[in-house]
Length: 80
Image (cartoon, rainbow, N blue to C red):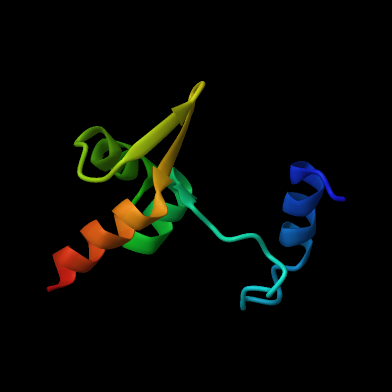
């Protein structure tokens, strides 16, 4: 069985394949960098949005993760 680090390394090695692999575990969180990329904003602004409590964030030490379902719901409401 692969460790989390080995799975992450395998995912980075396979960046040429943009489609999700059927064997990939489901994604429950986004990083702040992923939020910045989705919204096409800088990381500083993405951190500011996280502090506004517009969606659920999870802090693990100094790391910030954004609950995917919460962000997706907020984002979809911004579009409508």
